[in-house]
Image (cartoon, rainbow, N blue to C red; front, side, top):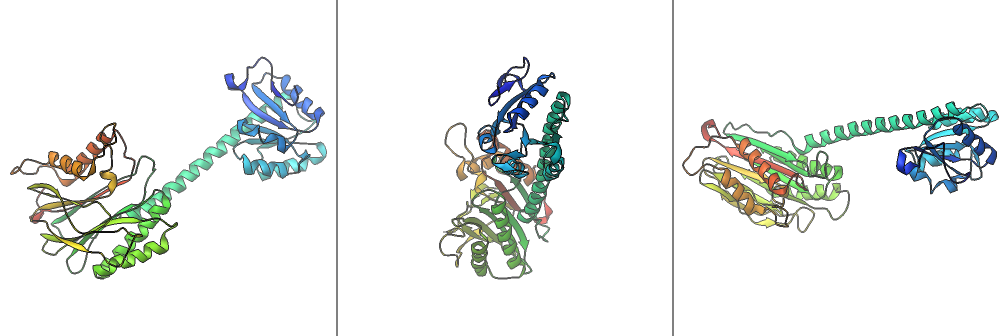
Amino acid sequence: MIGGEVTFGDVPSVEGSGALPILLIEDDDGDALLVEELLLDVVTTVDMRRVRSIGEARAALPDMQCVLLDLDLPDAFGLEGLRWLQTYVPEVAVVVLTGQADEHLGQAAVRAGAQDYLVKGQVDGLLLDRVIRYAVERRRFRDVQTQLTEARIYAEENARLERGLLPSPILADPDLRVATRYRPGAQQMLVGGDFYDVVQAADGWVHALVGDVCGHGPDEAALGVCLRVAWRTMVLAGRPVAEIRPIMGQVFEHEQHRPGLFATMTMLSVSPNRTSARLYLAGHPPPLLITPAGARLLAAPVHTPLGIGDMRHWPSGEVELGDSWTVWMYTDGLVEGRIGAGSQRLETEGLIDLVSRSLPAAGEPRSAPDEVLLDSVIARVRELNGGDLTDDLAVLALARRPGNQDG
């Protein structure tokens, strides 16, 4: 039985029972036999396999929950074997076996990360069985605590990133309102690389920005934060728009964590009269203009994204907004959702159709505020997709209601 898989008593194998799989790493046949006999003396549900060295243990370790480790092996002496196990199989509980003369090593092993230690010749079957099970439970508890700590740190980091990506608008005009929505993609926990911002400058112009760093994860989110903060800083400093793209291009170039990244953006600069604007597109979906007459896309020359091509120029297009309007600026997650089980996607045409269906008929007053329309359309987009969208979704709705009209 020594050197192979051993099942104690009448307990079936691990595959059919939930018996606790343990690995004895012991090169002394007498000590190994003693361990087997101790466990045979008690009613237990452990499956034990024995190997003679760390080298032999490599193949068996992925299936084990606990290791009984001798500290004097042919290929590992003292704490070397424990350190190897902690490096390559940190999830496995380790109980160290020591001789009477080396009890201090057992204590050192516990300080170094082992769950417990036993002195050969001073152990009975009940104690051995109990120590094994307590070691596994302590290992599991430690893992849970580690996961909880990591989750808390991750949540705190994402909260900081979210504050950087999705700030509060700087807006003084009482006729203007902002509604925003953000949803992480199906593969994301909290935030990705989408960002937005709204700033009213000292000269009365109101500038709105939506951007999307390609890829997912905290690195892309951090890059998005850098771009948004750079944009807000330049707008607040009163720098001309002609300087914004080159500076953001430099920030992008120096802050990107790997080559091949790019970021799409759209910027809308609303004039002080609030009936017209300048639209800037950098590889980004065009905004949607919603007025009492219906919904349509706004058009402007499309330049390449940040990270691709010439970043010194950013052409714009003049757009008429009217007296009462809402502009939706969004990332492509809103329009790249699928329609049903096929490969067809919503696209901008489908978005216009969804918004148009949700608007009142011509001449009828709008009874619902912009937030309700926004939530209704996003819910319908997710419904058509069959659930959460794959990509992150960010929408910024900037609306003008002269005289603080409702809706």
